[in-house]
Image (cartoon, rainbow, N blue to C red):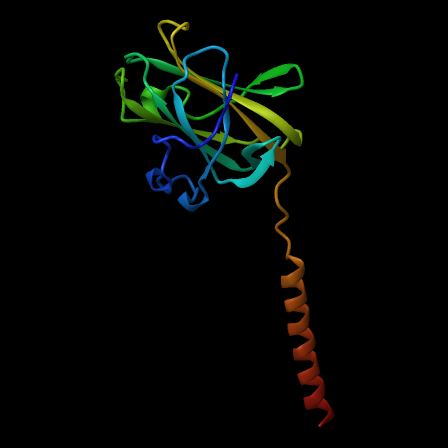
Length: 199
């Protein structure tokens, strides 16, 4: 298992992202990833959006906020041709593995560019949307993505592991700076009204 950086010629360019499902392309962040023990070395780049960048043991990664939708895109060099694929996504908590529901579990239907059938020797971008559950525990976790041939599970298109940090949603309350500005505005208005009354 080896760490892969984002320094290769086939990375996902931020402009290749479309502004869909409420996610801004400007928030795209290239991340480090681990190649799996199983499967070929075919993944050439992984990007996450939206992303609050964070360093996890030397990994450039992202914070996943509970209650948010995260988009993961991977560029993959097709090792074989196929017209029927399936994606498996699992998250690891300690020694336990839990299936992670993602959109695009059938890449040939909704999340592959260019579209199916996949042809050996070409590059493809796979897109997945993850709705981070509000009840998911905070802390570090590893997410594994595997794309397989439906007809032969031994044939793996690509497999990566991502280290991420799960945290609670950001507070929607006012920041300290906004609160102070708001308080000053109230005090100034009160002082002006008091001045008018005393006159």
